[in-house]
Image 1 (cartoon, rainbow, N blue to C red):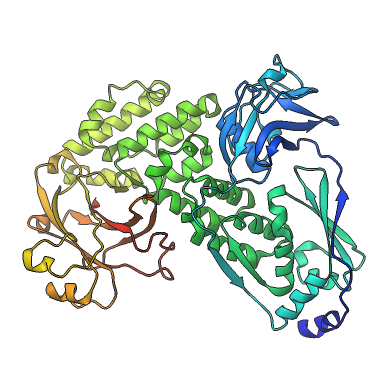
Image 2: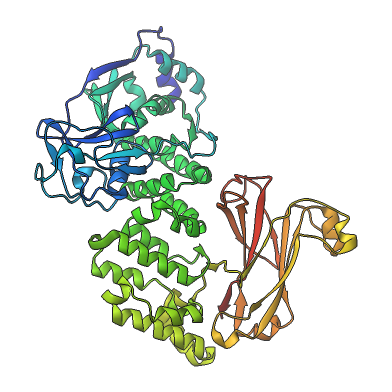
Length: 561
């Protein structure tokens, strides 16, 4: 039926171009950058019929993030206070800005009031927005849900022949709009658009940076084929959301997961998570959270850490797949985040986040030091904080049989995250095959080390020996009496005292693959019968961004049974 309906369109002659520029009415609360580059400049906001500036009082990275994302950029690089991009004219519309960083527009943030200010134009605020210069490649993935006539329909879209319906794409940062002439019959295959026989046009709001991708998206409506890159993923997902093309939303969400390692700044990932929250895309949220969990330690040390929202922090701290040095580092990072947020985070929100810290698993020496530290969390929630410390000391001092009955009430509080401290992990960097090493016992891809049987102080002196091995060839496996069919393959097993604890403790160990130099984690897996066969790009969760130069980290994860 679809083919029968579309054939008449394919015989129409090529007609006039389908792209024109029209004027667009100004919109309240829009922002623009005044400067030499589209991504940098003095921030101006539209209100009450005219453009005005923003005072730099309270102007920090969270405010800059909102501006940049409102304009369609992945995020902000830096703030520029004190009129560094020149002094504006006219009203100073906003002063004493206080953004959370997750708002969709600058006017949603807290401020004194429109035009209420004690500033001069010497204090006009500016920003530098992220344009993708730190993105490591232009890798693209193709989405293909094509029909039999996709090629011909693509030519029909390119020509615009016989088009009878206009899509006005309004630009949220300039005073123009793009107009595309398309075929109503095509759009009527997408019921979410509510196109009727009487309809002649629709208007959609799309940010300036997404305009280059609109044509490719509309062409997808004809052909069901499109290429997705790290720079186009969010725009295409947004367009699919606006037009109600759920299949493309799902495909772009999955493709974006493959592109996650391409941006080492975390700006794109955080922006995509917030976008996933706004659109209710749970799959996209989970994919981003998994990547940020695996790279949590690098996220904590990045400038983006202080800008993430409460709901994102809440979601992260509940996860057990966070990769960090230890739980104490996570507590310190939470303290710093709360200090940076200030009054933006309520007392109830602080308490909620503090409850996600697993005091039981903080190393006992650091737990002891923590009780003497002066912190915002301790000052604001002393009872809750001290309760966490007490339970941590009890967990370290009492045998498991004594506290077993209370475990269920602690839920995930006693479940280990993926702690990579030197006491619990070892790294193998050598990925070079060198057979002579076996004759001299010098294979750099075999490491032996010991850990406590469990993190609590009761087990500190009770050691378990571990051996970590990486095999890159069948010959290497054969030298250790094994048969391997896929490479690389990792082997990780305990010996010595391990069997003494099998009735009480189990080991859910993990293998972490990361780039040697960028350090981003792109794959985490468990061991089955002490073995972990490293999958290829098509089967692992994320593509390998450094296929010839990555490292293996073996992590011991003891858990009470």
